[in-house]
Length: 322
Ligand code: PBG
Image 1: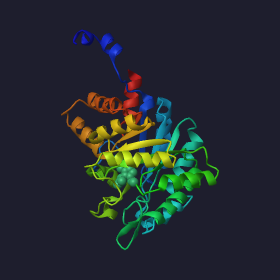
Image 2: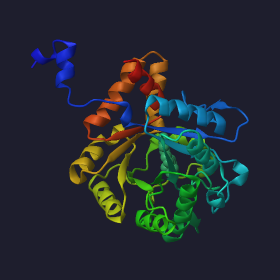
Image 3: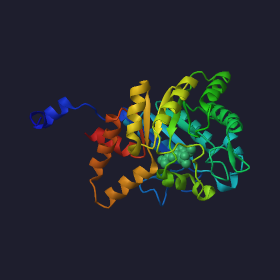
Image 4: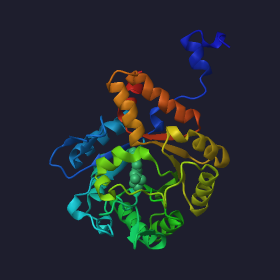
């Protein structure tokens, strides 16, 4: 077995997977400002960007060859309400950011989450009625949110809310609004994970959620067959691409999904994963370059067609440098 490992050229020749810039999706946070670029305490290496700064950085991502950027809004707490109406404001921050990117950077795809958590005063992804997240009433709002994002120019609509039946309803709403061309990347198997902490700090939903959890709609980490049922439903309802989330703790799910459906399958190296790797690298406990390459290669080996990662731009730069 060691003969093929002797030299760099044979190792390259026999490599079964290869991480490339085409595999990277960059999640970015946009805020109103005034700072152009503001650090997030619990999320080393990640920044909240103003709209103009975001457009600049997306321009760099596109120049590096990154195919898709996911834009997440940091909503002014004063605009958050129990029903998250700001999600339906066509002039809201995320819509303005998407329109600005589409106008300035034509050759990159733009993705938006469909979910209410950046906009609700309770921090949940859906509507809360008497202590319960209600399904069908939420789905109606999500359909309107998706159409508003499509109006702003969003290419990839990504329902991340885990309500039942939302993919089919959103597909119908987009089609009816004339957006047959817009893709749906469904957060199909999304787990109720402890790894979302830094993200909730970045978008400011952590204080709203106030220690609450999302276990009545996100999946139980104990389950795997259930993930296949979730993915099967989303495909049946019209998803063009499916996602497993989080990433590294759930690579078994990525492999099962890819093998069972052969769909374009993505995984999200979520905020807690990134923060752990970043912190260890910054402390000098692990090698910065190698740890990110190795972790992203693991996604590819598990069958992912692409990875949402906060390291996308830094990794793309290193890939380009060779
Ligand atoms: C919101 C959403 C979350 C993430 C992406 N979209 C958080 C949550 O479900 O609470 C997490 C991403 C990350 O941790 O990097 N629906």
